[in-house]
Structure formats: structure tokens, C-alpha cells
Image (cartoon, rainbow, N blue to C red; front, side):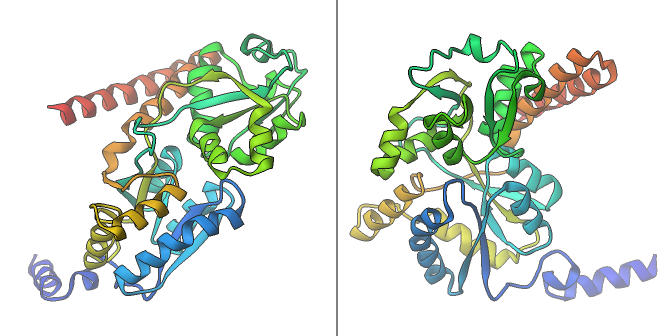
Amino acid sequence: MILRRLMLAACLALPLAACGKAEPEPKTLNFSILSAESQSSAEADWQPFLDDMAKALGMPVKAFYGSNYTGLIEAMRFKQTDVGWFTNQSGLEAVRRAEGEVFARSVNPSGVDGYEAVIIVKKGSGLTLEKVLACDKSLDFGMGDAKSTSGTLAPMTYLFAPRGIEPNACFKTVKSANHEANLFAVGAGVLDAATNNTASMERMGMLGTAAANHTLSQVEIVWRSPRIPEDPLVWRKDLDPALKKKIADFMFTYGKGDTEEAKRQRAILARIQTLPFAPADDRHLIPVREMEATGAMLQARTKGDAAGEAAARAELAKIQREKAAGEG
């Protein structure tokens, strides 16, 4: 007991980082970004924002681009990155596996909070949702990254699982790719149908290139999910508190106000498809946890897995209690 008290006193006398509560402030902040389209277009859109962030923090801010969310989650887990923009499902995994913590969220420029997962087909193909779900193994189908909320989790939760459909057993082939690749593949007739989301399609429209406009004119939506919350920004829990404050001060003032500088900043934010960021915490992930548990319950029921269904129901009950507590 005496030794424990001595250790506690010594810890209180030392800086917070020395007690194992936080890491020293890094010399460079590594910001992870999924290059959901091409990395070159992501770099062009993000670099002005990262440059402004570097000036505000007084330290270099380096982009860490990844082609899939698993790589970005692992990068945060092994402290190769400090903060990043994730989807809801991948953000949940970063919280669970990489000691991450939600601190902010994006805000849809349209003014409508959230976005929708969709299934697209080639316009004029005659494919309807009913034909897509016929499961006669005649169609080539495109899914998103395994950790993509709109590309995989939402279609599984809201469309396939309630019908007892396993995509690999339903379609001739199932290919996994980013939203841009799936869009172009459906437009070119390489894939018969694929998942996507309304935010990604709006972004392609904003590019205004001949290729993007042509491709968008070649596809149509045959299914939409319920609205999905906007994306979270996640930082490592063990970042130095002083650095967290600097990041938050930058994030929550950037693009705010009526000055010319604020207008310039909002134009930069528009390129990465958000209005000024809003504060958030891990409660932002409750809807995606609910989707995940619902999907697990439905899949367990289809397989006759009573224990799995009971576990999923217990998780849903826990989530409902958390929602009630948050509303109280």
C-alpha cells in the first residue's frame, strides 16, 4: 500500500505524459485520409486544408493516404497516424482496435444531415431491384471496402440480411473496390450493379469533368438506404492534451465567420465535401453500432444461430439504453 501511494505521488509530480496517460507532442502530425477516388485528386483537394492546419498548429501536418480503411485503422493502431477522417464503421473499428476517439464530424454541404447508401445499375439495362435480388448468379456485383459503411455495412444491414441473402452466393462475381471505381465500372458495363453513396456521386458531379458527367449519366439508382450519419474524425486517445486543444481550436473555428479569410476556408472545405466541422464524441457511432448489431441479429436468425441472435439482441438492448441515457 505504501509503495502504491509513493508511485501515485511520483506520478502526480510528473508531467501527464510521463504517467503513461498521453504521448509527448509529436514533431509532425500525421493525418490519415482514404483516397476513395484517386490519390491524386485527394491530394489536390486536401493539401490546402492541411497547409492551413500546419500553420495553425505550428508544426508540419503530413497526409497519410490509404486505399482501404483496414490499412488506416492499423496505421493509427501502431501510432503511424495521429488523426484521421473515417467512415462510421471504420471509425468504430478505430475506436475499438486503435485506441481512437471521435472528436469531430463532417457536415453535409447540402444542409441535409447525412447521406444514403445506394445500389446503382447501368441506365437502360432493364435491371430493377427485384432482378438484382433474384440471386440467379447471373450478375457481376460490386461492393465497397469491407469497413465501408455505405459500401458494405448499410446494404448488408438494410437490404441483404433482412432477405437472408449472402452476396457471394447471390451473384456471379462480387468485387470489392472504392466508390469511384464501382461507379465507372457500372457506367462502362463491366459490373451489372454496385453499391455506392449519394455523397460520393455528388462529389463526382462537382468535379465537372467530361468523364465524370458522362459516367453519371450512364447510371441510375435502384435502391437507397435510410439516412446514414456524416463521417467522424478520430484522434488517438493518448495524444498530448495540449495538442488535442490546438487541433480542436483549429477544427472548430476553421471556415467560421464573415471575413474574406473565412470564405476562403469554406471554399477549401467545399472541396472535401463538408461545411465547418462540428464537435462530436463516441456517441456519434451509436447508429452504426445499431446497424451492425441489427445485421448480426438478422444473419444469426437466417443461420439458425440462437446464441448469436441472443447476443445481438443483448447488444441492441444495450444500445437502446445508451440512447435513452443520452436523450435524458
